[in-house]
Length: 241
Image (cartoon, rainbow, N blue to C red):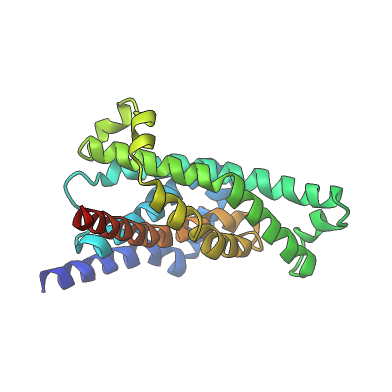
């Protein structure tokens, strides 16, 4: 009963967070204007809120709680904000570079197609951008995110973890690479992220990062599933030994 009450409070809080953007033109237009003028700051804010929200939901799925000792909601939000800035940069770089590459390969009109209405050329371009970005940038970002999560947990979820040196070598050595490769990279990238980001790059540029941040909620759920799979595997190994 207590958990249902917490779920209701959580849902109401999320609804209250988003409702002003739908019911108030002033709020929505202010958001749009600030988004255009300060894209990196807005990318930080969007990912700090939405991607962290996804992780909180993932924790709820995995443990039945929205927070736990050592989870570190605030430091995770800061890390997601920084990652959000890199995601914005990646979107700009790949969205500009891949269409130019396609034209160099002999496919004419790709750059112009990305500025216009939906057509097969634009779909090809969006899919290509998504493929290249998810094969080049995404594995690095996902692995870095896993490293920072581990670092935060190892420091008890305290905000001071952000000021501590990250032991990259130790964390990389101890990381569950079977789960990282077989689920996070090999399954989520081709079956979820590439199709999802194809849709992202069909959108107008000002909405791409917001949609990507909303997808961060899905990422939290996927990471929760991945964490559960990793735990199940650990139990299987323990039983065998």
